[in-house]
Structure formats: C-alpha cells, structure tokens
Amino acid sequence: MRKMTEYNKLNPKSVSVVVPVYNEKENLPAFIGRTMEVLDGLGCPVELILVDDGSRDGSPAIISEAAKQHPGRITGIFFNRNYGQHTAVIAGLSESRGEIVVTLDADLQNPPEEIPKLVAKADEGYDVVGTVRVGRQDSPFRKLFSWLINQVTAKTTGVRMKDYGCMLRAYSRPVVDAILQCPERSTFIPVLANTFADKTAEIEVAHAERPAGESKYNILKLINLQFDLLTSMTTFPLRLLSFIGAIISLIGIGFGLFLLIMRLLAGPDWAAQGVFTLFAILFFFVGAQFIAMGLIGEYVGRIYQEARGRPRYFVRERVGASSLPDIKINSST
Image 1 (cartoon, rainbow, N blue to C red):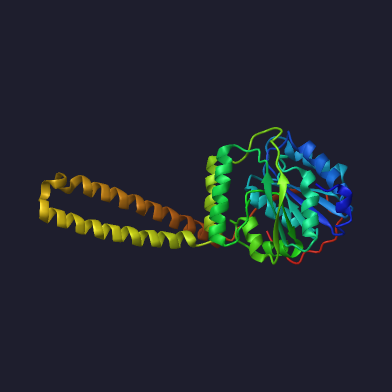
Image 2 (spheres, rainbow, N blue to C red; image 1 turned 180 degrees about the vertical axis):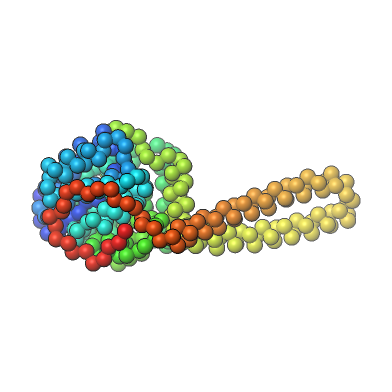
C-alpha cells in the first residue's frame, strides 16, 4: 500500500465522505477520529457527512458533538426514524458537495485508511470505483449470501463486478448528480451508479472485524435486500416467471397425456386410481401460483409506493455546514 504522501500528489479535488449511521455508539468516536485523520492527509478540501438513520443508542449526540468540534468539515443529518441504509446514503449524496464522493459504513469493517486508494483511483478519471474485500472477516453465511447477490446482480444488470455488497465505493460528481435525479424510492445505489458511469474500476481493500456491536443485517434484511435489488433494477424475474410458467404448462400437458395412456393400458388401479398423483400435481401448481402472485405483488407494491409520490425521507435536524462550494447540478429528496 502506498504512503499517504504519494496520494497527496495525486488528488487536487474536493472530497466528500458519506456515512450512514444506525446504532453505532461504540464505534463512532474511533471512526470519526480515524476518518478525520485520513481526510487531513489528503491535502484537498474535504467534508464528512454523517447521516443518522433513526438511531436510539446515543449516536446522534456523538455526531452533534463532532460537528461542533470540526466546524465546516463535519455535517450531521438526523432522520426522524429508520429508513434504511440506501436511503441514508441518498440523503448524504444530496448533501455532498465534493467532486469525488466516497461512501462507507461506520462499523469500521471498512477501514477509513483505505479512502485515499479510492480517491486516487477516481482521480484517474473513473466515474465509479468499486472495491473487493480482501481477507473478509464475515461469517460463511454472509459470504455465501454476498456471493449470491453478486451473481444475481451481474446476471440481471450485465455489469460484472466482484463485490457489490461493499459500501466502500467512490463516485464522480456527475454520477452522483445523475443518481439524485432518479425519483424512485427503492434503489440499489451501486447498480444505479454503474448505469450512468462511463468508466468503472474495482480495487482491493482491506476488511476488518467489527470492533463492537452487531451487524444490522440479519437474514430477513438480507432477503429483503435481494428483493429490492431484483425488483428495483430489472424486470428479469417477471420474464423468468413467464418462462418457468410455460415449462410447467408443457410438463403438465405431457404428464396428463402420460396418465391417459397409462390408464388405457394398465387400468385405473396402476397408481391408486391416480388420486395421489393428482394431489401431487395440484400442490405443485398451487405452489407455483403463489410464487408468481408474490413476485407480481412485489412489483405492484412498488408501483403503489412510487405513485403516492411521498418523500424518500424526513430530516428531523441538521447540524454543521460544509465549507465546500456547492457544485451540484441537481438534487432531490
């Protein structure tokens, strides 16, 4: 890894760091201290934007105090309730003013010391800089689920990246402005950013164990994330459902012909007069119908949410004000 002084020579631009925060009281003081030390070494105008996503553990007080201690450099945004990680990131992007915007989590699993590597790569002209976690400190289950998300994302979007699940990423100002012009409530930011990017890159970054607290993504939230990804970015599941339905119909027709032939050849007693076979077929088709209705319901529900036109989030309070000039093209909430 190159020394900080080498990055200082590469980056003349302003940098914003956007961090969603949810119940990270134990990690926040160390995170803020380490992040500000890294930003001080970049040698360019910087800002740190901490978006509190409805924390109930004292995180807002830590953010407010940090904003007072670093006037013009730290901004705190406080939601009235929990809206979710990606909504918090959108709010931070809307507040950001830097020419390069870096996102990462506050749990210190993505070390802030990796920020200069992303800034240097983005400064080479890349619109999106993704990261691949090396020596990942997660459970086998989390690794398996992450691999599944990466595979599904690559297949459905056609943009192949190795690690879509890592929040540590860098975006150019034009890509951030393009993201903010998209009004949809449910979105997967890394994929959305790639749709607007001309040049993308991935670099390897370190990954650490969480010093304190627990991950906010349990199995249910991971499944919900997968649904968000599929239904907010592509209609591929609906097309796949139609394809599967056609195959099931052909199987049903073929099996019906088989039953008719066997009944004529062997009589009605060859399979308990076909009662259990018919029940098996019935359960199969009923299950397939419920899956189809559930998937269609996901899309209908999202259409309903978008049609209401409600704001993505409600900001209860802002503390601190950035000293960076406002160079945003467009922004929306």
